[in-house]
Amino acid sequence: MRALLSVSDKRGIVEFAKSLESLGWEIISTGGTYRVLKDNGVKVIEVNEVTKFPECFEGRVKTLNPYIHGGILHKRDEHADEAKKLGVEGIDLVCVNLYPFKETIERTDDFDEIIENIDIGGPTMVRSAAKNFNDVIIVTDANDYDKVINALKDNKNTLEFRRDLMIKAFEHTANYDSMIANYMNKRFNDGFGEYQFITGKKVFNTRYGENPHQKGALYQFGSFYDNLKTLKGEASFNNLTDMNGAIKVAVALGKGAVSIIKHANPCGAALKDTLLESYTEALKCDPISAYGGVVAINGILDKELAEEINKIFVEVIVAGKITDEAIKVFEKKKRIKLFELGSDELYIAGDDIDFKHIEGGFVYQDADKVKDDEVKNAKCVTKAKADDFKDLEMAWKIAALTKSNCVVYVKDGAMVAIGMGMTSRVDAAQCALKKAKEMNLSVEGAALASEAFFPFRDSVDAAAKAGVKYIIQPGGSIRDDEVIQAADEAGIAMYFTGIRHFYH
Image (cartoon, rainbow, N blue to C red; front, side, top):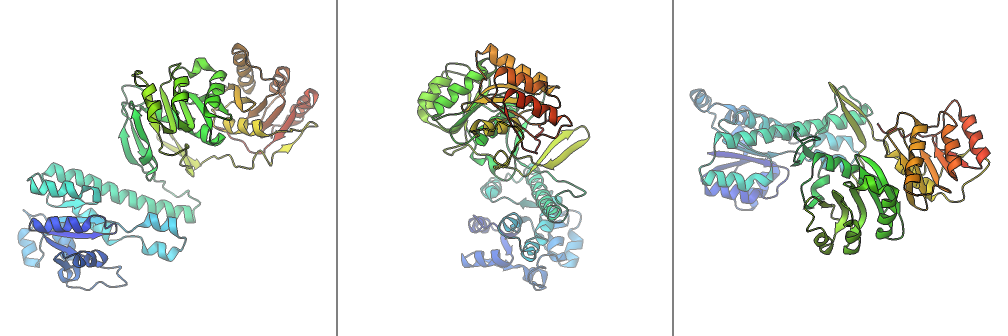
């Protein structure tokens, strides 16, 4: 039996080769892998001894040879006579992982170097071995070395075993080629080529999808969710989407912030001097909706805060870290789920792209992000001016992360009212005010943010009646003059950012 080992990631390759050798396998290798194996005492055959042709063109051609691919691809039962006639010996295991294209594009913009880190021979060998999984073992992941050795030792090298490795191999090359195509389109076509490839690695299955009759799973770009720790419970599909929304709001507001999400929309958010105070103020906005919701803690969840949260039922808590004492507080609550990201504060991936499924395809776009200077650079369009921008900035960030149409009212570092997902902006404004009144929350002196322009003055009139002090919005309506006039009449300071943040 012969194995061909040629890897870019050399973790564990020496031990893998020695284990194969101890089982009677003959080892073939190339380039750097050959040198590492030889230097570590593995009896290894250099690939040019098999190909009868030297590596050439600065190593661009090493394994593209009939003695290699014939050895991998020929069917052991049907092609044995032809292989013997041609002098082709079987290669029964191929272990390949590919040139580090991802690491290269992250490290440099040198196109010549990037081109040289596009693997050709590697993917070809992987695909050959995967195609002939009936006879050949294909290994593309260093984490599978022990599994392969154990299968060989225990006589469990079954067709089903090799089939699973085959699927993993084709996933490996598909992801690699997709990454290269996406990079080239980003570099030369503004990221919008004829094809768009979206790939992710499965982190875990969810209990089910949005509803119990649907299957679901979490997939990640790169290794972003490797640090997500489940401390209690099991994440559902809906938990994950709500957690995403809650984390984005809490991160946008800054360390020490707390956000509460229900059905993908904020129902509370605050940034105060302590996490306990932030949570207490966030909960005041809409404690009814917070029941069964998701709480994001941008910091460390300790026992004191846990005891306060435990006074009501929330389904999910996600924090930068959760102390052991805090976990014990929730021990008796069977339905609560606890997650942490393994850092002193929450963080987000900050993806540059965004896409949504529509029937028959998907729409794809650059990700919408609120720039740090949007509020700072906003234009005052009224006679009155703001003397403090903290609430304006907080309201603006929350509005950008809330389903349109939306309006957000923030006062003293806490969201006090919100209307979202409405077909009319004035309905959103009035709905928010109605709810604030029901909660005995005053919006007098608050900052109001709208993610898109006010088409009529009615929303401003409603805000003025409630005592709103500041308004921030994109501007751009054909009735901007009327809206500004309404603000001036009420003595409200209004700012135009010139940037819309629809969120559908």
